[in-house]
Image (cartoon, rainbow, N blue to C red; front, side, top):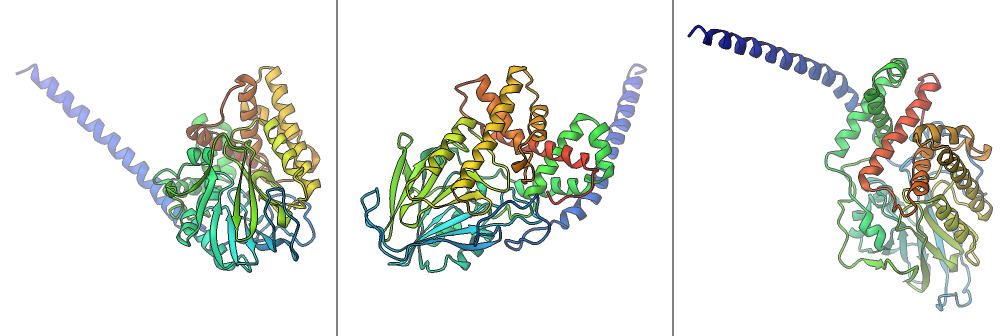
Length: 445
Protein backbone atom coordinates (compact mmCIF):
# COMPACT_ATOMS: atom_id res chain seq x y z
CA UNK A 1 0.00 0.00 0.00
CA UNK A 2 2.76 2.51 0.80
CA UNK A 3 4.29 1.89 -2.64
CA UNK A 4 0.96 2.64 -4.26
CA UNK A 5 0.75 6.11 -2.74
CA UNK A 6 3.61 7.66 -4.79
CA UNK A 7 2.16 6.19 -7.97
CA UNK A 8 -1.24 7.67 -7.18
CA UNK A 9 0.41 11.01 -6.38
CA UNK A 10 2.30 10.87 -9.69
CA UNK A 11 -0.93 10.23 -11.55
CA UNK A 12 -2.50 13.20 -9.76
CA UNK A 13 0.48 15.40 -10.64
CA UNK A 14 0.43 14.20 -14.28
CA UNK A 15 -3.32 14.86 -14.44
CA UNK A 16 -2.83 18.38 -13.11
CA UNK A 17 -0.15 19.18 -15.69
CA UNK A 18 -2.22 17.59 -18.45
CA UNK A 19 -5.18 19.77 -17.58
CA UNK A 20 -2.86 22.80 -17.43
CA UNK A 21 -1.65 22.01 -20.97
CA UNK A 22 -5.21 21.55 -22.19
CA UNK A 23 -6.25 24.81 -20.55
CA UNK A 24 -3.33 26.68 -22.11
CA UNK A 25 -4.07 25.22 -25.54
CA UNK A 26 -7.75 26.12 -25.18
CA UNK A 27 -6.86 29.66 -24.14
CA UNK A 28 -4.55 30.06 -27.15
CA UNK A 29 -7.21 28.64 -29.47
CA UNK A 30 -9.88 30.94 -28.02
CA UNK A 31 -7.62 33.97 -28.33
CA UNK A 32 -6.73 33.07 -31.89
CA UNK A 33 -10.36 32.46 -32.77
CA UNK A 34 -11.39 35.74 -31.15
CA UNK A 35 -8.95 37.54 -33.48
CA UNK A 36 -9.29 35.45 -36.63
CA UNK A 37 -13.08 34.95 -36.75
CA UNK A 38 -13.92 38.68 -36.95
CA UNK A 39 -11.27 39.04 -39.66
CA UNK A 40 -12.72 36.07 -41.54
CA UNK A 41 -16.14 37.73 -41.38
CA UNK A 42 -14.60 40.77 -43.10
CA UNK A 43 -13.66 38.66 -46.13
CA UNK A 44 -14.04 40.67 -49.32
CA UNK A 45 -15.73 38.34 -51.82
CA UNK A 46 -16.19 39.76 -55.30
CA UNK A 47 -19.55 40.87 -56.65
CA UNK A 48 -18.28 40.59 -60.21
CA UNK A 49 -15.45 41.80 -62.38
CA UNK A 50 -14.13 45.21 -61.33
CA UNK A 51 -11.31 47.53 -62.40
CA UNK A 52 -11.65 49.76 -59.35
CA UNK A 53 -8.57 50.41 -57.27
CA UNK A 54 -4.93 50.91 -58.19
CA UNK A 55 -3.40 48.62 -60.80
CA UNK A 56 -1.11 45.88 -59.47
CA UNK A 57 1.84 47.16 -61.52
CA UNK A 58 2.65 49.68 -64.20
CA UNK A 59 -0.12 49.57 -66.84
CA UNK A 60 1.27 47.76 -69.91
CA UNK A 61 0.90 48.94 -73.47
CA UNK A 62 -2.50 48.07 -74.95
CA UNK A 63 -3.95 48.09 -78.44
CA UNK A 64 -6.48 50.72 -79.58
CA UNK A 65 -9.98 49.52 -78.77
CA UNK A 66 -8.71 46.84 -76.39
CA UNK A 67 -8.19 48.36 -72.93
CA UNK A 68 -7.39 46.10 -69.99
CA UNK A 69 -10.88 46.52 -68.59
CA UNK A 70 -13.74 44.21 -67.64
CA UNK A 71 -16.21 42.86 -70.13
CA UNK A 72 -16.73 41.58 -73.66
CA UNK A 73 -14.60 43.10 -76.43
CA UNK A 74 -15.03 42.48 -80.14
CA UNK A 75 -11.71 41.16 -81.43
CA UNK A 76 -12.62 40.57 -85.08
CA UNK A 77 -15.76 40.58 -87.23
CA UNK A 78 -15.62 38.93 -90.66
CA UNK A 79 -18.16 40.96 -92.56
CA UNK A 80 -17.95 38.92 -95.73
CA UNK A 81 -17.45 35.31 -96.78
CA UNK A 82 -13.81 34.25 -96.93
CA UNK A 83 -12.19 31.74 -99.22
CA UNK A 84 -11.81 28.13 -98.20
CA UNK A 85 -9.63 27.90 -95.08
CA UNK A 86 -6.72 25.50 -94.63
CA UNK A 87 -9.06 22.99 -92.96
CA UNK A 88 -11.08 22.73 -96.14
CA UNK A 89 -14.30 24.33 -94.84
CA UNK A 90 -15.97 27.51 -96.06
CA UNK A 91 -15.77 30.26 -93.44
CA UNK A 92 -18.72 32.61 -93.33
CA UNK A 93 -19.33 35.54 -91.05
CA UNK A 94 -17.53 34.74 -87.80
CA UNK A 95 -17.08 37.00 -84.82
CA UNK A 96 -14.35 36.56 -82.21
CA UNK A 97 -15.08 38.04 -78.78
CA UNK A 98 -12.76 38.26 -75.77
CA UNK A 99 -13.99 38.46 -72.20
CA UNK A 100 -11.30 40.43 -70.36
CA UNK A 101 -10.91 40.55 -66.58
CA UNK A 102 -9.43 43.23 -64.34
CA UNK A 103 -6.11 44.68 -63.38
CA UNK A 104 -7.60 46.46 -60.34
CA UNK A 105 -7.08 46.19 -56.59
CA UNK A 106 -7.96 42.50 -56.64
CA UNK A 107 -4.80 41.85 -58.62
CA UNK A 108 -4.44 39.56 -61.59
CA UNK A 109 -3.77 36.12 -60.12
CA UNK A 110 -6.65 33.80 -61.13
CA UNK A 111 -8.54 36.67 -62.82
CA UNK A 112 -8.39 34.96 -66.18
CA UNK A 113 -9.81 35.76 -69.62
CA UNK A 114 -12.30 33.77 -71.67
CA UNK A 115 -13.58 34.13 -75.21
CA UNK A 116 -16.26 33.20 -77.72
CA UNK A 117 -16.52 32.38 -81.41
CA UNK A 118 -19.93 33.42 -82.75
CA UNK A 119 -21.20 32.08 -86.07
CA UNK A 120 -23.39 34.96 -87.25
CA UNK A 121 -25.20 32.81 -89.80
CA UNK A 122 -26.74 30.60 -87.10
CA UNK A 123 -26.29 32.48 -83.80
CA UNK A 124 -24.45 29.44 -82.47
CA UNK A 125 -21.32 30.09 -80.42
CA UNK A 126 -18.36 28.32 -78.91
CA UNK A 127 -17.08 29.40 -75.50
CA UNK A 128 -13.34 29.30 -74.84
CA UNK A 129 -12.75 28.60 -71.11
CA UNK A 130 -14.83 29.52 -68.10
CA UNK A 131 -13.77 31.74 -65.20
CA UNK A 132 -12.54 31.03 -61.68
CA UNK A 133 -15.95 30.45 -60.09
CA UNK A 134 -19.57 29.95 -61.05
CA UNK A 135 -20.92 33.43 -60.17
CA UNK A 136 -18.26 35.06 -62.39
CA UNK A 137 -19.01 32.66 -65.25
CA UNK A 138 -22.75 33.16 -64.89
CA UNK A 139 -22.40 36.96 -65.08
CA UNK A 140 -20.14 36.63 -68.11
CA UNK A 141 -22.69 34.51 -70.01
CA UNK A 142 -25.58 36.76 -68.99
CA UNK A 143 -23.71 39.73 -70.49
CA UNK A 144 -22.88 38.08 -73.82
CA UNK A 145 -21.29 37.44 -76.12
CA UNK A 146 -23.29 39.88 -78.26
CA UNK A 147 -24.92 38.08 -81.17
CA UNK A 148 -24.48 34.68 -79.53
CA UNK A 149 -27.84 32.97 -79.13
CA UNK A 150 -27.03 29.30 -78.50
CA UNK A 151 -24.04 28.05 -76.53
CA UNK A 152 -23.23 24.81 -78.33
CA UNK A 153 -19.61 24.06 -77.40
CA UNK A 154 -17.07 24.77 -74.69
CA UNK A 155 -13.34 24.29 -75.27
CA UNK A 156 -10.90 24.34 -72.36
CA UNK A 157 -7.45 25.62 -73.23
CA UNK A 158 -6.08 23.71 -70.21
CA UNK A 159 -7.18 22.33 -66.85
CA UNK A 160 -6.23 25.04 -64.31
CA UNK A 161 -9.07 25.96 -61.96
CA UNK A 162 -9.14 29.63 -62.99
CA UNK A 163 -10.19 28.42 -66.47
CA UNK A 164 -12.44 25.51 -65.39
CA UNK A 165 -14.11 26.79 -62.21
CA UNK A 166 -17.38 27.70 -63.95
CA UNK A 167 -17.57 24.50 -66.00
CA UNK A 168 -20.92 23.38 -64.57
CA UNK A 169 -22.54 26.69 -65.55
CA UNK A 170 -21.59 26.26 -69.22
CA UNK A 171 -22.57 22.58 -69.29
CA UNK A 172 -25.93 23.36 -67.71
CA UNK A 173 -26.68 25.57 -70.73
CA UNK A 174 -26.27 22.65 -73.10
CA UNK A 175 -22.65 23.08 -74.17
CA UNK A 176 -20.67 20.02 -75.23
CA UNK A 177 -17.13 19.94 -73.88
CA UNK A 178 -13.82 19.71 -75.75
CA UNK A 179 -10.34 19.48 -74.21
CA UNK A 180 -7.01 17.71 -74.58
CA UNK A 181 -6.51 14.29 -72.98
CA UNK A 182 -3.61 15.59 -70.88
CA UNK A 183 -5.82 18.38 -69.53
CA UNK A 184 -8.52 15.87 -68.63
CA UNK A 185 -6.03 13.62 -66.86
CA UNK A 186 -4.25 16.46 -65.09
CA UNK A 187 -7.20 18.60 -63.95
CA UNK A 188 -8.14 18.36 -60.28
CA UNK A 189 -10.92 20.00 -58.25
CA UNK A 190 -10.03 22.11 -55.21
CA UNK A 191 -9.45 20.11 -52.01
CA UNK A 192 -12.30 19.80 -49.48
CA UNK A 193 -12.63 22.76 -47.10
CA UNK A 194 -10.28 24.79 -49.32
CA UNK A 195 -12.51 27.83 -48.97
CA UNK A 196 -12.25 27.72 -45.16
CA UNK A 197 -8.44 27.41 -45.31
CA UNK A 198 -8.21 30.36 -47.72
CA UNK A 199 -10.45 32.46 -45.50
CA UNK A 200 -8.40 31.69 -42.36
CA UNK A 201 -5.05 32.21 -44.08
CA UNK A 202 -6.20 35.46 -45.72
CA UNK A 203 -7.28 36.72 -42.30
CA UNK A 204 -3.87 35.79 -40.93
CA UNK A 205 -2.24 37.83 -43.70
CA UNK A 206 -4.38 40.87 -42.91
CA UNK A 207 -3.37 40.51 -39.26
CA UNK A 208 0.37 40.41 -39.98
CA UNK A 209 0.85 42.40 -43.20
CA UNK A 210 2.07 45.43 -41.25
CA UNK A 211 5.21 46.16 -39.26
CA UNK A 212 4.65 43.46 -36.64
CA UNK A 213 4.48 40.85 -39.38
CA UNK A 214 7.60 42.30 -40.95
CA UNK A 215 9.56 41.81 -37.71
CA UNK A 216 8.24 38.29 -37.18
CA UNK A 217 8.87 37.34 -40.82
CA UNK A 218 12.47 38.58 -40.58
CA UNK A 219 13.40 37.54 -37.03
CA UNK A 220 10.87 34.88 -36.11
CA UNK A 221 11.09 31.11 -36.61
CA UNK A 222 11.30 29.73 -40.14
CA UNK A 223 7.93 28.01 -39.69
CA UNK A 224 6.28 31.42 -39.27
CA UNK A 225 7.83 32.67 -42.52
CA UNK A 226 6.44 29.63 -44.31
CA UNK A 227 3.04 30.18 -42.72
CA UNK A 228 2.98 33.81 -43.84
CA UNK A 229 3.99 32.71 -47.33
CA UNK A 230 0.94 30.46 -47.42
CA UNK A 231 -1.18 33.29 -46.02
CA UNK A 232 0.07 35.72 -48.67
CA UNK A 233 -0.74 33.30 -51.45
CA UNK A 234 -4.19 32.56 -49.97
CA UNK A 235 -4.98 36.28 -49.90
CA UNK A 236 -4.90 36.28 -53.72
CA UNK A 237 -7.73 33.73 -53.78
CA UNK A 238 -9.83 35.38 -51.10
CA UNK A 239 -12.14 37.31 -53.50
CA UNK A 240 -13.47 34.16 -55.18
CA UNK A 241 -16.49 32.00 -54.34
CA UNK A 242 -14.41 28.87 -53.78
CA UNK A 243 -17.39 26.77 -52.70
CA UNK A 244 -18.95 27.34 -56.11
CA UNK A 245 -16.38 25.85 -58.43
CA UNK A 246 -16.12 22.82 -60.70
CA UNK A 247 -16.44 19.52 -58.80
CA UNK A 248 -13.91 17.53 -60.82
CA UNK A 249 -16.40 15.59 -62.97
CA UNK A 250 -16.22 15.67 -66.76
CA UNK A 251 -19.19 14.59 -68.93
CA UNK A 252 -18.78 11.18 -70.49
CA UNK A 253 -19.46 12.51 -74.00
CA UNK A 254 -16.67 15.11 -73.88
CA UNK A 255 -14.69 15.56 -77.10
CA UNK A 256 -11.12 14.68 -76.08
CA UNK A 257 -8.14 15.47 -78.31
CA UNK A 258 -5.99 12.30 -78.11
CA UNK A 259 -2.57 12.33 -76.46
CA UNK A 260 -0.84 11.50 -79.76
CA UNK A 261 -2.66 14.18 -81.75
CA UNK A 262 -1.22 17.64 -82.37
CA UNK A 263 -4.44 19.22 -83.62
CA UNK A 264 -8.16 18.74 -84.14
CA UNK A 265 -11.05 20.59 -85.82
CA UNK A 266 -14.48 21.64 -84.64
CA UNK A 267 -17.42 23.29 -86.40
CA UNK A 268 -19.44 26.09 -84.85
CA UNK A 269 -22.37 26.51 -87.17
CA UNK A 270 -20.58 27.11 -90.47
CA UNK A 271 -17.32 28.33 -88.87
CA UNK A 272 -14.26 26.09 -88.61
CA UNK A 273 -12.18 26.19 -85.43
CA UNK A 274 -8.76 24.54 -85.12
CA UNK A 275 -7.43 23.18 -81.83
CA UNK A 276 -3.61 23.15 -81.73
CA UNK A 277 -1.74 21.27 -78.98
CA UNK A 278 1.21 23.36 -77.73
CA UNK A 279 2.27 22.07 -74.29
CA UNK A 280 4.40 24.31 -72.05
CA UNK A 281 2.25 26.00 -69.41
CA UNK A 282 0.64 22.59 -68.80
CA UNK A 283 0.83 19.27 -70.62
CA UNK A 284 -2.64 19.79 -72.08
CA UNK A 285 -2.45 23.31 -73.54
CA UNK A 286 -4.68 23.95 -76.55
CA UNK A 287 -4.62 27.07 -78.70
CA UNK A 288 -8.04 27.76 -80.24
CA UNK A 289 -7.40 29.11 -83.75
CA UNK A 290 -10.21 30.83 -85.69
CA UNK A 291 -8.92 31.44 -89.25
CA UNK A 292 -12.18 33.07 -90.34
CA UNK A 293 -11.89 35.67 -87.57
CA UNK A 294 -8.08 36.00 -87.77
CA UNK A 295 -7.88 35.33 -84.02
CA UNK A 296 -6.18 32.89 -81.65
CA UNK A 297 -7.35 32.21 -78.10
CA UNK A 298 -4.06 31.17 -76.50
CA UNK A 299 -5.04 30.44 -72.90
CA UNK A 300 -2.06 30.62 -70.54
CA UNK A 301 0.46 30.16 -73.33
CA UNK A 302 0.33 33.98 -73.42
CA UNK A 303 0.25 36.64 -70.69
CA UNK A 304 0.54 40.42 -70.96
CA UNK A 305 0.92 42.89 -68.11
CA UNK A 306 1.26 40.09 -65.58
CA UNK A 307 4.21 37.71 -65.49
CA UNK A 308 3.60 34.27 -67.02
CA UNK A 309 3.82 30.92 -65.21
CA UNK A 310 4.79 27.47 -66.44
CA UNK A 311 3.91 24.29 -64.52
CA UNK A 312 5.47 21.90 -67.03
CA UNK A 313 7.99 23.84 -69.11
CA UNK A 314 10.79 24.05 -69.89
CA UNK A 315 11.31 27.65 -71.01
CA UNK A 316 12.36 26.42 -74.44
CA UNK A 317 8.90 24.81 -74.82
CA UNK A 318 7.24 28.13 -73.90
CA UNK A 319 9.37 29.89 -76.53
CA UNK A 320 8.53 27.24 -79.11
CA UNK A 321 4.80 27.61 -78.37
CA UNK A 322 4.96 31.42 -78.65
CA UNK A 323 6.81 31.16 -81.95
CA UNK A 324 4.15 28.78 -83.28
CA UNK A 325 1.35 31.09 -82.13
CA UNK A 326 2.95 34.08 -83.83
CA UNK A 327 3.32 32.23 -87.13
CA UNK A 328 -0.23 31.03 -87.75
CA UNK A 329 -1.23 32.22 -91.22
CA UNK A 330 -3.57 35.19 -91.38
CA UNK A 331 -3.82 35.76 -87.62
CA UNK A 332 -4.02 39.39 -86.50
CA UNK A 333 -5.06 39.24 -82.84
CA UNK A 334 -4.23 36.95 -79.90
CA UNK A 335 -6.30 36.67 -76.70
CA UNK A 336 -4.04 35.74 -73.76
CA UNK A 337 -5.08 33.82 -70.66
CA UNK A 338 -4.37 36.93 -68.58
CA UNK A 339 -4.06 40.52 -69.76
CA UNK A 340 -5.32 42.60 -72.70
CA UNK A 341 -5.67 41.53 -76.35
CA UNK A 342 -2.29 41.28 -78.12
CA UNK A 343 -0.83 41.75 -81.59
CA UNK A 344 2.13 39.91 -83.16
CA UNK A 345 4.70 42.35 -81.80
CA UNK A 346 3.46 41.82 -78.23
CA UNK A 347 3.36 38.04 -78.67
CA UNK A 348 6.97 37.86 -79.86
CA UNK A 349 8.10 40.25 -77.10
CA UNK A 350 7.09 37.66 -74.51
CA UNK A 351 9.93 35.43 -75.74
CA UNK A 352 12.35 37.85 -74.05
CA UNK A 353 10.82 37.02 -70.66
CA UNK A 354 11.39 33.29 -71.11
CA UNK A 355 14.91 33.83 -72.43
CA UNK A 356 15.64 35.75 -69.23
CA UNK A 357 14.28 32.94 -67.02
CA UNK A 358 16.22 30.38 -69.06
CA UNK A 359 19.46 32.34 -68.66
CA UNK A 360 19.06 32.99 -64.92
CA UNK A 361 18.21 29.36 -64.14
CA UNK A 362 21.18 28.14 -66.19
CA UNK A 363 23.53 30.47 -64.31
CA UNK A 364 22.25 29.12 -60.98
CA UNK A 365 22.60 25.55 -62.27
CA UNK A 366 26.17 26.25 -63.41
CA UNK A 367 27.04 27.48 -59.89
CA UNK A 368 25.08 24.61 -58.32
CA UNK A 369 23.05 27.29 -56.52
CA UNK A 370 19.74 25.48 -56.08
CA UNK A 371 18.11 27.73 -53.48
CA UNK A 372 14.97 28.54 -55.48
CA UNK A 373 14.05 31.75 -53.69
CA UNK A 374 17.59 33.11 -53.93
CA UNK A 375 17.83 32.27 -57.63
CA UNK A 376 14.37 33.70 -58.34
CA UNK A 377 15.15 36.91 -56.47
CA UNK A 378 18.21 37.34 -58.65
CA UNK A 379 16.05 36.83 -61.73
CA UNK A 380 13.55 39.43 -60.47
CA UNK A 381 16.31 41.92 -59.62
CA UNK A 382 17.71 41.63 -63.14
CA UNK A 383 14.35 41.52 -64.89
CA UNK A 384 14.41 43.27 -68.30
CA UNK A 385 12.96 46.81 -68.00
CA UNK A 386 9.92 46.03 -70.18
CA UNK A 387 8.72 43.40 -67.67
CA UNK A 388 9.85 45.05 -64.43
CA UNK A 389 6.57 46.85 -63.88
CA UNK A 390 4.36 43.81 -64.56
CA UNK A 391 2.25 42.27 -61.82
CA UNK A 392 3.06 38.93 -60.21
CA UNK A 393 6.83 39.30 -60.33
CA UNK A 394 7.12 36.39 -57.90
CA UNK A 395 5.95 34.02 -60.66
CA UNK A 396 9.70 33.80 -61.26
CA UNK A 397 9.86 31.49 -58.22
CA UNK A 398 7.81 28.81 -59.98
CA UNK A 399 9.41 29.40 -63.37
CA UNK A 400 12.97 29.18 -62.02
CA UNK A 401 12.12 26.03 -60.07
CA UNK A 402 10.63 24.32 -63.13
CA UNK A 403 13.58 25.33 -65.32
CA UNK A 404 16.09 24.10 -62.72
CA UNK A 405 14.29 20.77 -62.48
CA UNK A 406 14.57 20.34 -66.23
CA UNK A 407 18.27 21.17 -66.12
CA UNK A 408 18.87 18.62 -63.37
CA UNK A 409 16.39 16.00 -64.65
CA UNK A 410 16.07 16.22 -68.46
CA UNK A 411 13.09 13.83 -68.58
CA UNK A 412 11.17 15.43 -65.71
CA UNK A 413 7.45 15.61 -66.51
CA UNK A 414 6.33 18.75 -64.67
CA UNK A 415 4.85 19.66 -61.30
CA UNK A 416 2.50 17.21 -59.59
CA UNK A 417 -0.52 18.47 -57.67
CA UNK A 418 1.14 18.45 -54.21
CA UNK A 419 4.33 19.96 -55.59
CA UNK A 420 2.28 22.65 -57.30
CA UNK A 421 0.72 23.73 -53.98
CA UNK A 422 4.17 23.84 -52.36
CA UNK A 423 5.39 26.07 -55.20
CA UNK A 424 2.39 28.36 -54.70
CA UNK A 425 3.32 28.63 -51.02
CA UNK A 426 6.92 29.41 -51.97
CA UNK A 427 5.68 32.01 -54.45
CA UNK A 428 3.65 33.51 -51.60
CA UNK A 429 6.76 33.56 -49.43
CA UNK A 430 8.58 35.42 -52.18
CA UNK A 431 5.70 37.91 -52.43
CA UNK A 432 5.66 38.37 -48.64
CA UNK A 433 9.41 38.97 -48.62
CA UNK A 434 9.07 41.63 -51.33
CA UNK A 435 6.13 43.16 -49.45
CA UNK A 436 8.06 43.51 -46.19
CA UNK A 437 11.10 44.90 -47.99
CA UNK A 438 8.84 47.73 -49.12
CA UNK A 439 8.25 48.48 -45.44
CA UNK A 440 5.27 46.28 -44.68
CA UNK A 441 2.74 48.79 -45.90
CA UNK A 442 -0.45 47.16 -47.28
CA UNK A 443 -0.25 46.77 -51.05
CA UNK A 444 -2.77 45.87 -53.72
CA UNK A 445 -0.74 42.83 -54.85
